[in-house]
Length: 259
Ligand SMILES: NC(=O)c1ccc[n+]([C@@H]2O[C@H](COP(=O)([O-])OP(=O)(O)OC[C@H]3O[C@@H](n4cnc5c(N)ncnc54)[C@H](OP(=O)(O)O)[C@@H]3O)[C@@H](O)[C@H]2O)c1
Image 1 (cartoon, rainbow, N blue to C red):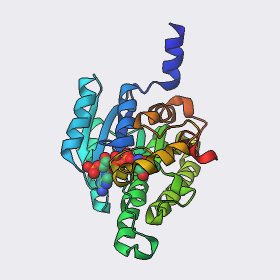
Image 2: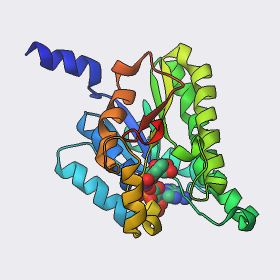
Image 3: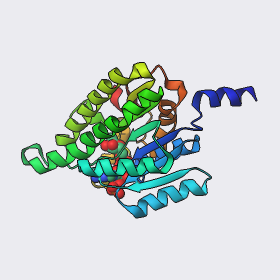
């Protein structure tokens, strides 16, 4: 059918290779699944092997091409090692998704240097290092997609933004710098900005039904986000369809941010 060809020319990821950090849980897992189901070969990166095996097993059972590489993104050596392990599976990636992150929330006055450093290492340094490792190759090959996951707290302070908000604000700036460098060579760099999505990242907040309802009421859609809400935006940003979208922060938040 004409519409099948039309849609696959725009959005199919057949023949593409993706690395998705944090792809074993929450939003990253949904994005990894979406890219794999759209045709990409996907390598998922995180620390815990049981979750990695589970996420990859689900995709392979669905007929997708997926694999995992376990590594700790909180150290520079850990990032370098796992990047090479990821490449060893399906080759150099066309698509890099940085979803792995941590959110430690001490009150600002008690925010230690250790929490600051760990937060920056996982949330900002790892995406930077992976960009340096994969971005130039993408540019040389003339196609690439870098997608970071940031946060409302990159734009406004709430619920003890602390180091987390600072790391996410910097990550959006990094995306713009990467876009400036590599967009002329076919590599777009964008961020997806979630609202509130119940995942292990915010287990404490998720356990407070009053707060969860309050957050849902702040959206225009009238509910909190689901990890699956990111599937379409991720496939779009990873595909040929988004060739002219770069340096952008795209809010997938049910309208949370616009009022
Ligand atoms: N959920 C929300 O409401 C929300 C809101 C705004 C922004 N976000 C952003 O969305 C992204 C995904 O969050 P999520 O809610 O889906 O979180 P999640 O379910 O907690 O998943 C986090 C993922 O990152 C991995 N990870 C964490 N630390 C790592 C490390 N040192 N090395 C390697 N992997 C590591 C985790 O696996 P291991 O623990 O096994 O390593 C897991 O796969 C994050 O960037 C987050 O900041 C989420």
